Amino acid sequence: MYLEQIKQPNDIKDIPASALPELADEIRDFLIRTISVTGGHLGSNLGAVELTMALHLSLDLPNDEIIWDVGHQSYTHKILTGRREGFVHLRQYGGMSGFPKRNESDCDAFDTGHSSTSISAGLGLVKARDLKKESRTIVSVIGDGSLTGGMAYEALNNASRLDTNFIIILNDNEMSISENVGGMSKYLNSIRTSEKYLNLRDGIYYSLAGRSKRADELIERIRRTKRTIKSMVVPGMFFEDMGITYLGPVDGHDIDSLTRAISEAKKVRGAVIVHVLTQKGRGYEPAIKHPARFHGAEPFEIETGLPAKPRTSANYTDIFSTVMCKLGARDPEVVAITAAMPDGTGLKRFRNMFPDRFFDVGIAEEHAVTFAAGLAAGGLKPIVAVYSSFLQRGYDQIIHDVCLQKLPVVFAIDRAGLVGSDGETHQGIFDLSYLSSIPDIMVMAPKNKWELSDMIKFAVRSGIPAAVRYPRGTAYTGLEDYRAPMEYGKSEPIYEEKEILLYAVGSMVKTAEEVRKLLEDKGYYCSLTNARFVKPLDREYIIKAAKTHDLIVTMEENVQSGGFGEHVTAVIEEEGLSGDVKVMHVAIPDTYVEHGSVDILKEMIGIDAASISKRIIDERTS
Image 1: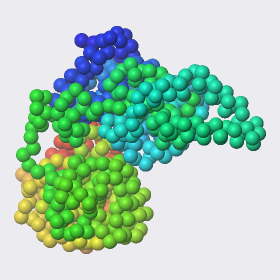
Image 2: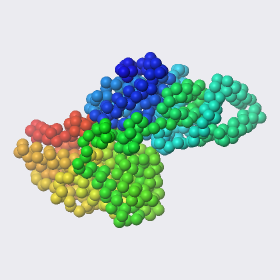
Image 3: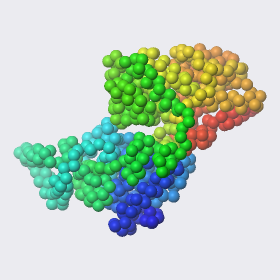
Image 4: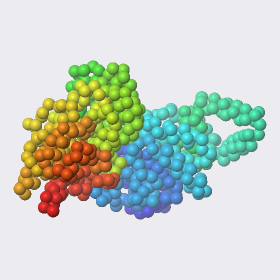
């Protein structure tokens, strides 16, 4: 096996050229077998095998640097830099990350996880290289989906002013941005990047520039004429018009063509885009047929592509999906917005039922928020379905475009709290803090599947900016008999005792139930209250509880800084009750939480039932 010969960076260069297609097959087979066990991003990685091989053949790592946009297509890169053995524990606690990590390898130039950042980061690395007078090639690899994000265009606008080499690989695995015009395109690409052409062009431009007004006019006339001719025969004129050289399209599964294109791109004095056409899921039919399922796949059966452990219970996303369809059927003013995640957020059914009221804006969360604000200003009832960690990107728009105008936009925040194997960039552990800092927004979290339904409906009826945050995974079906009507800013007491109060938010209500039972076995009897609202706080209840309990334990799956617990403590201090009651914060510490199963992560950071119970008992016996 040629794959076994890859033990460190640049070993691929010792593989005979005739054996490279076989190596590509071995890599695909390895990825399919490994990810079928661990889970992970399969489709995008299968599509980028030859592209990654060509980059490693053309570059000298780690001196040269590759920035992978999002980074979920970097598995082949990890293999080719000597990390094949790490795939046994891919995305597991203490194991190898599913994304590039600088602390994992010198060959990972930049940590990524969110979309549309690679060109900005690459441009920064280029400028750092030039200021330090170093010699290295910088390559940003971005997918066509990531190119829907506005940040990518902000970076392209800056990159167009470069007078030094910067390579941008556009990995196009879904839509053809421009038609392949065959031999003429290839011919013009080779001419425009040949030494003679570049020397002639640079010689003319740099010898005439600034000499006189007439010379500058002549340069501009040459450029206009060149653009006019190109626009008739050359694809990628959008980039060319920005001042960025365009090469392609290139067959993304032809290693020879790819290495030639990268070699040509390295000659360009300025920013250059190499447009590469690839097939997502290549080499594995189930991944080709079901790209959404194999974007971030759970462990699966290789023969069929079906999940190894089929879900038997509905998850929170399923519940949201059902509620949205019912709301859409009842109210023609309800509309749904997603940022390139119709499947992940559960809006696929809504899209099928109400295509005219469904809007996928691409990977552009900032635009999604302001677009929703415009819909609301126009008299509609927009619901923005988004992952917690991705909504961070729309923070400014939530303040300025939604809340300042008190527009009735509802944010359905999926994957709130710990999400597990995707790690630091995807943990939804900041939303309670950043949302509760904003005036005029209502922030809620459900304790179980029925309350999620009630909260989405309540948020739509409220006519104000609102957010409902709920976790990833199976929807909790406990406490079915506790379903008090929703009342603005009011908590829901469930069990009432004296001395100790477990005051929990959303997913932590289930944990609080477990804590209550563990403490009861030790002779401690606790009240348990479902907070429901993080904003507005139920001040009246907090003041009352402080007078009937001597310990309030706030519980949230959010960072402590700026979170629910700190707000509860602030109320108690403002009311002069801090001498009567102690507040214990159960929250995520001030840190970034790495990848691993949610249960393991909760135990490691001390927010599982056993850790909380021990902490309470230690406090009572100290």
